[in-house]
Amino acid sequence: MNEAAFYFIAAGVCVFAVMAVTGRDIFHCALWLAMTLLSVAGIYFYLDAPFLGVIQILVYVGGIITLFVFAIKLTANIGYKSIRQTSKQWALALFITALLLCVLSRVFAAHPWAQTVLNVPAASIAQIGRSLMMNYAVPFEFMSVILLAAMVGAIVIGKDKR
Image 1 (cartoon, one colour):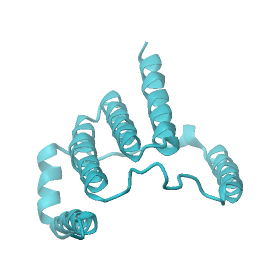
Image 2 (cartoon, helix red, strand yellow):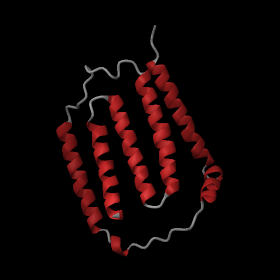
Image 3 (cartoon, helix red, strand yellow):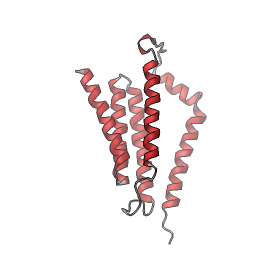
Image 4 (tube, helix red, strand yellow):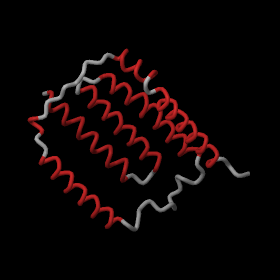
């Protein structure tokens, strides 16, 4: 039963990701991306990592998708059907994707997964929070400045020129 739940969630991730990439309406693609990220959070919860699941929902679904939706809505003419949605280089992209799939398949097949032993140190949420606010405070703040700059850039680009 547990394995079936994992495969159901993983299939949802794959289906939502394909819909996010192949969709024609950019707003719907952002919503499918949100569903993909929620499904990834479901995998974290399934794997008994609730902290990562909550962070996935708060940061990616709550923050990044909201930023995408604002950028889409504030950018003029981005949702028009006359804008081309496909690339002329699809054959090259298909070839590179197939090549990458073959290389990764060989690398994964050659790895001795059954012999790998993980020595994971026990860490509490308080230790993670302390580490984030002490050791990684500068990268954490840097990411918030980047997100703020992206939001301001979306507003400036999408601003009506009148």
